[in-house]
Length: 69
Image 1 (cartoon, helix red, strand yellow):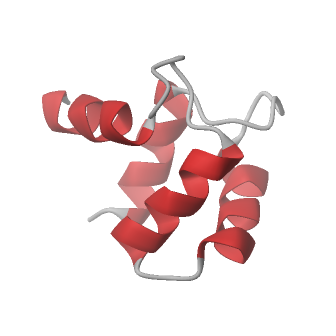
Image 2: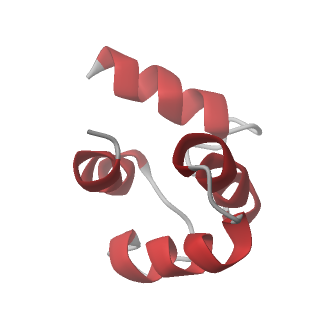
């Protein structure tokens, strides 16, 4: 879990506790090696459970379990 927290904090560039759409684009490009814009929209749709247009740590854990094996 510490590793996931460090990874989340790395991509949460402004340290607001969320990964914004802009930050998510970078995450997709770095971790998934895909073009960020389209994939980040898909990830938000799938893992932004509270529909606030950003990824919190709990949502990031769900994303990581599916995409970061």
